[in-house]
Length: 267
Length: 287
Image (cartoon, rainbow over all chains, first blue to last red; front, side, top):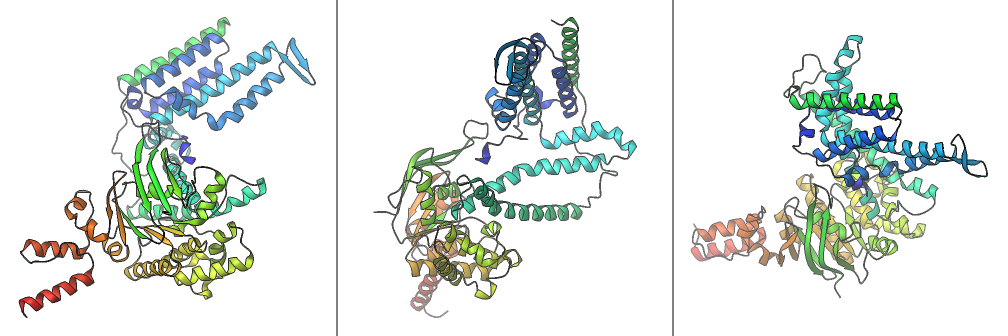
């Protein structure tokens, strides 16, 4: 069942989206999110949706894959929709008990849901097409200026890449331990809530023991290879911007500009 | 009636994604009560996936599995019942230990079966006896034991459910020779004493040749060879093509045959080879 978790998963490929510099993709994503929050009307939402669709088409990521990543967020999406729907302001269309459904409320609910969905899908687009390693590389380089104010940028990105690297490992481990305990008759999905919480103990204890063991082994392995932080470290893969990166930047700027214009004219 | 019956079983991982992989591809098998079956195959040949179907942890995508007349895929309750009948010891089972004491960890399975305290106690003591965990260790933390002892406690945790079928996935991986010998002996002992069916997955041809009465060879998700050890090991060339070895004794016999010594090909235990060689020397005369 945990095999279905797509969070942070990378689908290797050789499409233009995959080939983009990770810094470009991070900046593009930031621009995309800014555009998403500036968007106020159907036209700009359509434009952003079109951008997302174009990127996913270019990257050969199926819509189904993108949507399956939304599953864990279903509750938040539905909850947001309901709150917006039931507490709208303006002329009520329909009233019952303490709730008022208004045209504005329906409008807000739809936009809010679209915004969350496109936000999440856009973020997934990044992790689907960028390997965790190049992602943290890009992040480290983007944050490099912050070293001036003594932010341990290298250490942070190292921690992040290790954390990302171990997500699949831990998921696999969880799966294994779960199977092993199920084989001894443990029931994770039946019984009262308290029973279920207690049933997690045989899963969590070995998982934590394993995580600490791994951390220990990893630290030893890093020390054996003389790791001592970012000072004076060079890279095997130098990141360089190329033509498609500038194309992506232009597209991003265009998107934000278009959304701003649409917002100003209130179309 | 066979205790395990598998009909055209297929299992595909990550179906519908770019990572799709057919792990088990149309397997038909029957295993009788009381058999000691060795399962061999190189990494990724589908044997681990296969054994997880036998107690309902994985559901077949096509085909079916019948354990002692019941289908684990039919309902959650049946699957749970079958898990007590078919004990599965995973690779590196020591990583599943979680309780505060050895005793309570071994008792986890029997407790889930809903047995009385007295029955649980009986089951735990007997399982500990089978794997040679002394009662003096019962109150220590399983996390403080040595690697070999942890492994034995974990195996006892499955044996404590007194399964009719005991499946072990590479129970000796990563142990020293004495530890390996010990665990294999424990398993043979369990098989002899309880009459249970045992399925042993192993990479060590020598171990498996010595103790199993039937061998099943997996390759690319299918059963490539199935039969008595002598039959299976007479296909030495095919086994090598699959990336597998033959037992050392077979290797020696084949090499001798190549040099013109008249010797059986289907030798797979050191003891039998020694007997043959001694008798051969008798014929040739002392050298």
